[in-house]
Image (cartoon, rainbow, N blue to C red; front, side, top):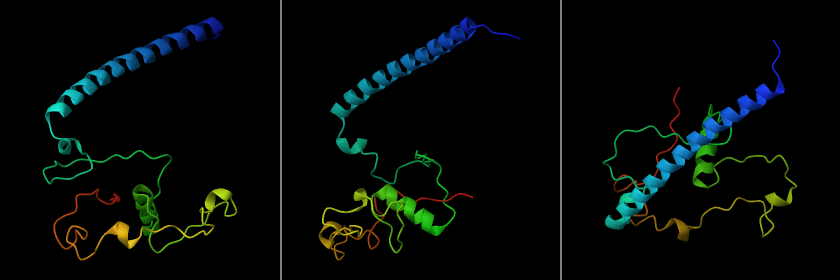
Length: 149
């Protein structure tokens, strides 16, 4: 069966119109939701909109983080590396080889190749209960990656 180029052009135009219509509808709904959120934010304290803080009143949920590519977390080192990447800290107790170790991008401004660890001043005093959540209450941070098999 032979299809003319005009048929393919018409099909492509129709598909584009359908997609653009759906995008237009979606953007309209997003605009309405943003307006509602702005009105609510004027009447409520900002703490109610902090999505990173856990209050203990949360319902059970499934977290779906989008990353580029597929993460193969089959070893403890892979999980540690993924958690370190998500938290912007280098993983503890492991070193990773770079594919281009002589690249200028890999060298810090001070010239050494050691990963920069947070100082004690940035981490806080371990004797203070608010700096060491393990001694007190449950920390209000994201949970670690849970590997489901």
